[in-house]
Image 1 (tube, rainbow, N blue to C red):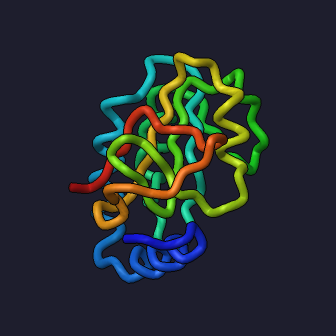
Image 2: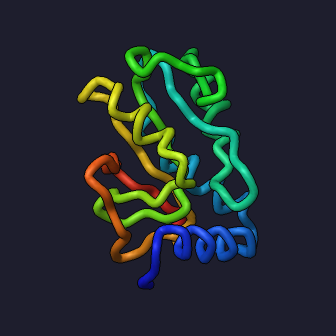
Image 3: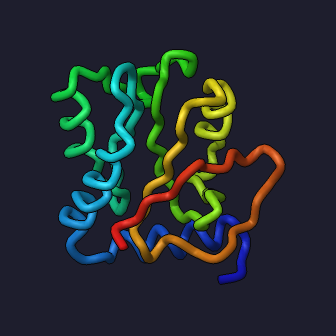
Length: 147
């Protein structure tokens, strides 16, 4: 789909809000994430908004293993993070991300240690062939969907 970032955001936000069975689909993604859980340390997730993958199950899994779980609202120090799960309006399989437009994640992700995995998550319908990118955009190491 061609368009400006704003047009693409609008399209994919509307699309994902209308997706059926988001809870079960989120749980599929959470099960996949469990295979990438670090043995120790701190995992950063996010509190889902309407249409985003709900990571509640994954956060509980991490806590059950004794990991620390943080969210962006807690203003975590990037140097303390061992895995970060990143939301997006849309992603490419190569890890390019269309975010909400504020640039918060791009700024935060640049402060992570190089060894920290950056995993993007989205529903399969939001995995696209290409997205407009800019030099400051941070590419994900892996993108997981429910498909």
